[in-house]
Structure formats: structure tokens, C-alpha cells
Length: 282
Image 1 (spheres, one colour):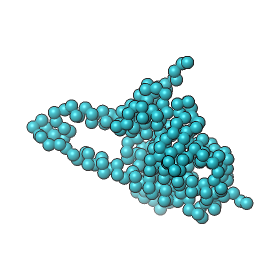
Image 2 (cartoon, one colour):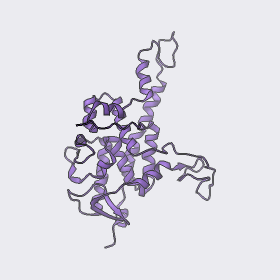
Image 3 (cartoon, helix red, strand yellow):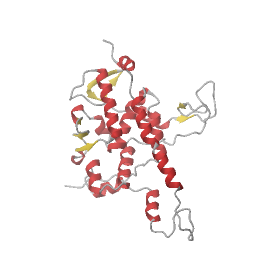
Image 4 (cartoon, rainbow, N blue to C red):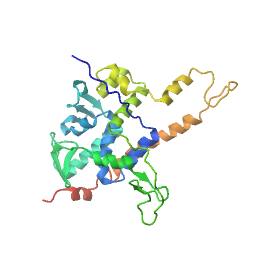
């Protein structure tokens, strides 16, 4: 039996501010909601896009707050994943949407097919390629703040600020990069290699090493521990510079707030009236 071929292309790990931006942009439009929910699951479970599309409600254990991947690219990909708060809130939001659209059965897909505003829970969604491409390329007008497609000037008739040459920091981000980012963050945490492999479904340490290359700033922090001085100090100083640590911690606190709001906003969880409009004519 030959080992799996390791893809040599290097995945992309997001900066924290780009991760926050991604989730904020995803809730800005209702037609991006599937991509937004899928992004939350990928970032918090390491799931592949194909695994998310194939999820059925029978795979979700509401008592234990876990989900089971029954179909994946490899045998090792079939695994049980505990859900953290962010992933669990996304699952609950998806379940409330499903109940508002029709009766929820175990064999129904979590991400149902949708054509011409008609949901078919017995078939899985084909994908969210268009929504993903649009939300990752969207720019924000520096004058009025309107989110829009890249263009020479703002699409707001009352603004028309020059936006030529502006590019989203998320441009070129692949959905699969979210899995890579999640595994990278796990690799930077105290979690053991075995635990990460069980969560992500990897088949070998070599595959894990390929995905979880530790980012430069983490390596720098590790090497700083070997230095006689700390960043921002001189050799004569006995203190520590905590400015960077404080700023980093403060910026990280913004992310849970963003995700909590995603479940409340219409863009990520339709209200009752919105659900009615998405139903097919009887």
C-alpha cells in the first residue's frame, strides 16, 4: 500500500484581524450566509469543504455536542469532533433555519440544496463558490465604508470616492485555507500531535507537518525565550515589554463577540419573515 501523496502547495494561515474581517463580511449579505456558516465550522473543527457539504442531521449529537464525519477523502477522515461554542452556535443557527423551512429529519442535509430560493433538504448543497469569491474579494470604501466589489470608484452614488487599485486582504483566500489555518492554530496550542491528528483526520505525522507549519511570529516568540533580553529592552534592562502582549490579547477578544453577533444578525440567521420568503410557492 503506497502512502498518500503530500500536496506540496503551502496553505495560508490568516492573521487574526483577517479572521475577524472574514466573519464580519460573511454576515453582511444574506446570500453569503452558507459560506459564513461553513467558514465558522471549518475554522473551529478543521473540517474540509466536502465534509461540511455531506453533513446530515443524524451526524450531529445534540446531547454530547459532537458531530461525526461519516464521509471524507480518506478513511482517517472519518472521525468524531467535539464542538466548541462557536461551532455549536453555528449548528444551532443552522438547525433553527432548517426547522423554519420544513420538518427536520435525521437523513436531511445540514446544508441543503437551494435552487431558485427552493430548499431541498434531501440533497446536499453543491457549494458556495460564487459567494466565497465575492466575499473574499469585497472591498470597503475608505470614505463611506460601503462594502462592494472592486471598482474604480465607490458604487454609492452619493459618495463616488476613488477606490481604484484597492484590494481586499482576503483576496485569493481559498476555503480549504480555513482548514489549514485551524490546524496551524492547533499546532501552536498545547495540544499533542496525536490529538491534532484525531481532530483533523490526518493519516501520518508527515501530513500533519505539511499542514501545520508554525508561523514566523510563533517561532520568534519561542526563540525569544532563549535570549538574555526581551523584545523592546536593552541588555541592561531587567524588565519585560508587555505592550505587544497586551495589544495582542485585546485584539483576540474581539473575535468571540463577532461570532456571537453572527447568530443574531439577519444576514447569518434569517428571521421568521425572511424564512417565509425563502420557501417555494405552495
